[in-house]
Length: 474
Image (cartoon, rainbow, N blue to C red; front, side):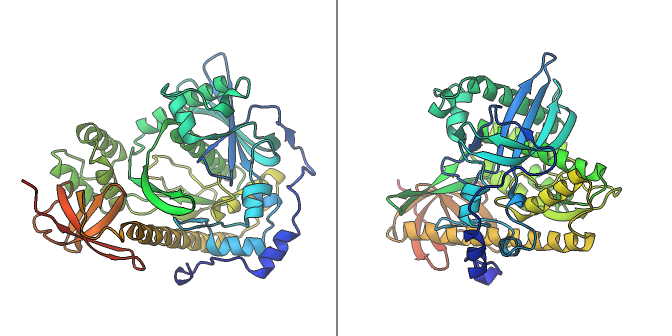
């Protein structure tokens, strides 16, 4: 982290400032709605404690659904220019490594006093989205409110229940009416998703892995699968971020937008499709690309994550840019949306905390707390630090995988080729899920080939895992 310009530890000034904060924010001044009686619930990872958002839905007779998304009011506790804020601005994000989590904010705040924890009354900014029966956003509003998390739910349990492959999680069953509430939210999310997909939102599926520990010792890396509950939250967050971006535009305030520019390497994406026997138009078109991806997912589901990863790399990285009112916004190519910011994770991402401060200024009829030049500098800094955080996480993950394999030199694995170019040939194995370089016998290998390999060398500190192609057993 230090080599990437990030701060792994909180300074004495940050610790002293956090020590003085003894309770969560309490409502003060202005009209703050009391929405504690609504059936708010969170859905996140099983072990997450830095809960940024809750959701609840109100169905209407005409098939419309009003979804309310409550976002933790972190700014009520973390003031602009404070020592805690300066640290958050330096890192701009929490860093999630296999070894340890490095939170953007002191855990006293992010996992407690500014978290929307179960059974805790908290101050929040509510984004209200009315979703018509056809999945379009018919109306929206934003306002401060007091909320109460009635159930801390987990992605996997909710997803299995929604798919009718498991009974309802105990925490869901324990709250009267929450089962019907979650079904309503699921229907609303699917309607939103259908509209986005009709506009060309890309359905990518890259392989993510999660470290598994046994009594505090790293035991394995397991693939993380997308599921219905994760998609539900993703759809609501995209909708909330769109509402937030448009609200700031309407109020005449600048915003920090999240964009994925039209890909410059579209020709390589076209060539990749041609290799699979498909044709894409010569100019970038997200709808055509998504149709190609849908075909490949059906034709070759086992290799689809690797194709997705190749497409992700060719699309390029997302970035933060300043949007000035009246200026034509740049679309997010991957999500197929015109207006998009980051606003729903202020405990974990600094751009979201910036957006929250802009929102609160707009709600109060006050000028922007940041100048356009300040926002432009922050946009560049946040983009850079996000990239640095990703590199830190990837490096630690590689070292952790190497550590798991250190005692298995000479072991044979079945592998799939994930990269093949002049820069090298790479394969991925399972049990544990890890990627390494083929240093011998790689001639003629192509992406997607399945090949037996033998582990030949490990360097834990550098995260190097080397394989040689093994002779096939007869």
